[in-house]
Image (cartoon, rainbow, N blue to C red; front, side, top):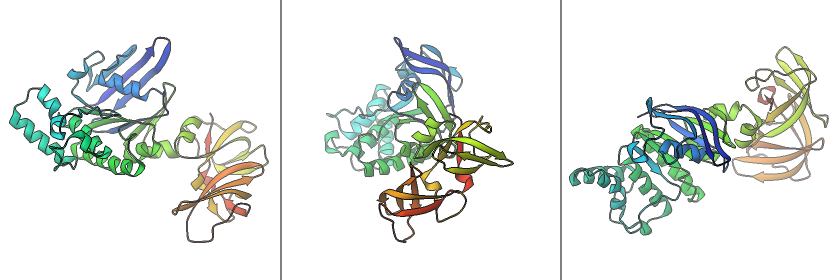
Length: 356
């Protein structure tokens, strides 16, 4: 297990900025995810760690050793690509063994390592199969086995589940996390899928336009986003621009242009946020923040849309001319219809204040 340290790294492609002044520390054995929309710089960063790209400026270190310009084959990394990059004319075992053969290990040792890793990825009976005889999920596991069999110090995965259907993605991400936990290998995972990031990661780095917007645990990223981009990119939220009308002890009162007045707690704000009376502030309200019936921050509105998921009922509610998303856990009670009036409340602790 090795740590990865990125120090003041910038990557330019001609005049195009790919990554800007990135600083990052990935701990040994950590499952760390780069998350963001397409073109945000996450794959570019991964490729600099792998050695496929060199930084324009800055340094990359493994366990304190400068590997900034070290060739990829000298870094002892395992890489799983989005398209798997398997050899279709080879069997499963031949694909898995490829990296070991390049290293010129004895045949008996190669056989032992291949058999072990094939079992670990639940492909024990598939060694003689050709790649085109496998399902997408099985091919993905072959690619993972090939990356792991060389016993890498660092495992890199570039959107490895994007070609799988939803059910298979869910099953495979559980397997990847299980294997990573069992082996304890330092893992860096790239995805645009927030569910993958939240369910698999020890920590997440959220990126936008080559910039790091926030680094934290899944809980920190979701419940205490640093800015509006992170709040809206991770999960769903109602983002309201509001005016601070009062600050009394622990309570901040804000008012929307449509007349909606809400009360939140001063502790529920992003780092660096300093609300001032008369100033503008953004309020993030997650759909699950709403609770049925009257209470603190009661809202009354008309239902514009209803979505029943089994676990929950999702409503789009028109309140004073503004549409708000609310999610109510399904308790078996009657579900309201489009056009019905509804009354909900938002506990003060569920309001989150952002400056930008």
